[in-house]
Length: 106
Image (cartoon, rainbow, N blue to C red; front, side):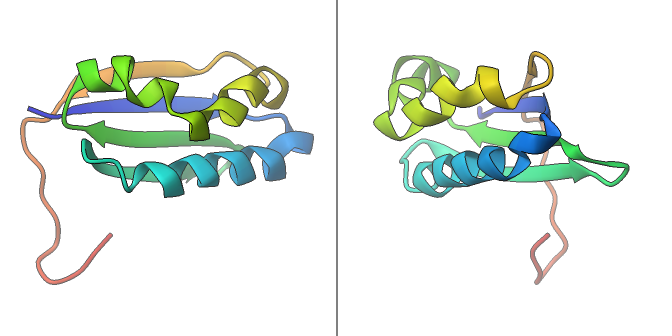
C-alpha cells in the first residue's frame, strides 16, 4: 500500500523563486526513483507564496531510510529554514482509492 505525504509550505515572498528552483530540482530527480509513485505541487490561488506538495511513495520505510538521504535533497533541506515563513505542516495518508479522468491527465 502506498503512502502519501501532504506538505504545506508558507514561503517568504522574497524566497519564492529560490524555493521553486530548489524544489523543482528535487521533484525532477525523485521521479526516477524506483519507489516513487507520483507527486503534484499545488499553489493557493489566493496566495502565491502558499504551496502544498502531494507526494506518494510505495513505502514509508524507504522514504525514511533511503529517499530523505538522497544527495539531490541536501541543498533543499539545508535551505528550508531560510525559505519558509513558518514551519512546514506534514501529514501522512494511506491510499484507499485513486481515480483519473479516462484518456487524459490532470
